[in-house]
Length: 147
Image 1 (cartoon, rainbow, N blue to C red):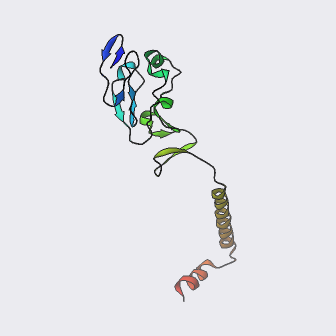
Image 2: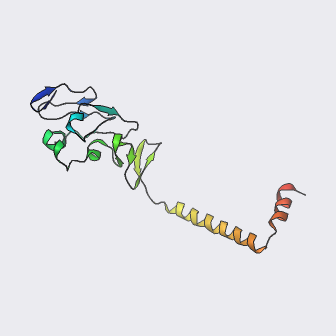
Image 3: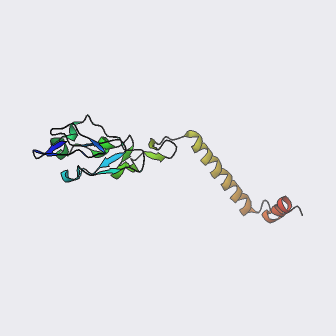
């Protein structure tokens, strides 16, 4: 159970309740709309594996609920996840189907080198074709049609 305005309410099945003035805390895999106190009894299943509640926070009390400093993303989402149902990733994170979580984006120096090499090669090919240095049509016929 939990108390709201001194009135007891039964704990939702997808939440844990410690009683007294502590509000329901969604179980892992579930999300709660914290935009209004009347929604605390309704929990929604998350589509991704990014909903993880932090039950030991003072934000799950009535006083903490109305306190604007409690961030619902920090309370109910895994690292890097945010928004409704923790279904989006924060800036600097991207969703990985492999790990089923939002992972921090890291600049891979090898990827950057590959992009530079491809740009240089494409530029070189365009330059060669535009200067007529190699007759592309003759080269294609000889290379692929074996005529």
